[in-house]
Image (cartoon, rainbow, N blue to C red; front, top):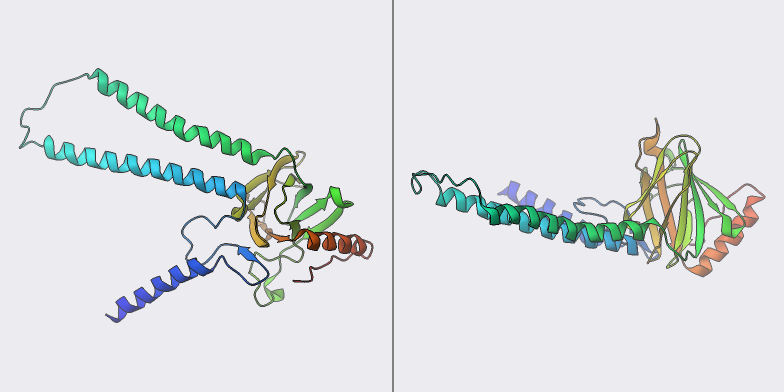
Length: 277
C-alpha cells in the first residue's frame, strides 16, 4: 500500500509539472524541455502549430490502421482456426482484395504527403520577413549578426556550471541571447565557420543545418514574449553539448532599445543586457 501511494504521488507530480512547467515568470513564457515531458514541447510559433497539426493527423491515421489490423487478425484467428474451419480454402486470387490493398494504402500515403509537402514549403522561407539574422556556427558557440540593424554582432556561449545563477538552466542558458521582437517574421540564414552544426529550437519547430561554405534559409516567429531554448543537434565535436541556443522574444519597443544599446556597446566590446533580465 505504501509503495502504491508513493507511485501515485510521483505520477501526480509528473502531471502537475506538465501542466505548469511551460508557464514561467512574469517576464514571459519559457520554451524548454520539462521534467516528465513525454510529447513534443509546447508550441510558441505558427510553424510548430502546423507541425503539431500534421503529427495529430498522422497519429489518427496510424491509430485507425492499427485498430483495423488488430481487429482483422482477431477475426481471422477466430473464424479460420482449425476447429471452426477444418478444410482450408485454396483460393489463390481475389481481384477486389488485391486492388483494395493496393489502392487504399496509396490513398493514405497521398493524404499524408499533401500536408507534409505543404509544411516543408511553409517552413522553408517566408516571402515578407520583417528582419534578417545571420546565424554562424562555431566550435563551440553561436554567432548572431543583425544586418538590418547596423550589423550588430553577438557571440553566444553556454554558461558553465560554476557560473550558473539561480533559475538558469544547466547546458541551456547562455551569456548572450539572440533577441528578437515578438510577432515578427525573422528570416534566419545559417552557415558555419568549421564543421556542420544544426540550429534547432523545438518550441518554434525550427531546425536547419549550418554547413561551411553554404547559406541555408529558414524563418521563425515567436507569438509570445519569453525565452525559448534549443541546442545544436548535429554532433560537431568534443564540446557539442556546450552549444545551447537561447532566444529572447521581447516587445518591439524593448527590441529597439536593445539594438541601440548593442550599437553603443560594440565600440566598448561589451554586450548589453535587457533591463528585465
